[in-house]
Amino acid sequence: MKWAPKSRNARTGGPCRNGGFTLVEILVALGILAFGLLAIASMQVSAMRGNAFASSVTEASTWATDRMEQLVNLSWTDPNLQDADGDGATGINDTGFDNDPTTQADADFQVIQGRYSIFWNVADNQVINNTKTVNVIVTWTDHGVGKSLNFQRVIPRVL
Image 1 (cartoon, rainbow, N blue to C red):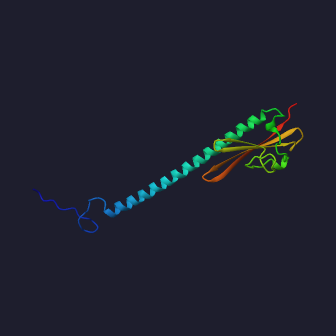
Image 2: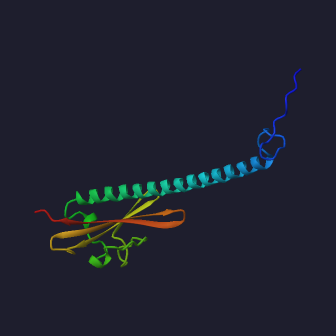
Image 3: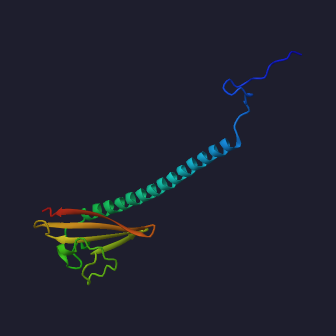
């Protein structure tokens, strides 16, 4: 058997250590990995909440658009296109929840679609004569906070 000299560190003159990672290095690497994974998980939760809110807004917009299209296609004298509580232009943005036509500051009409409440108000001749201004308001609750969306349109009287 031939004798071979041990490897020596050129800088220190001591034996070379090619054994691998120390326990401290492994613990630091695991800590950095854990921190990164927690940050990614937090971003994922935020993205899921944002997507859920965007879905709610999209659904509310769909209900508002659907109601507005129905109202535009009604005849001029249809009961759903009348100022039910008589508050005219001052009540066009009212979002009352009791829908009592005898009470001022309430919506003229209300329909419930799942978790969405759809209100609409009508004002005659607000912009110019022979028009009806219709404001559709959709409200819902998102994580305990009330949200609303408004669409407004002027409908001309077609003779």
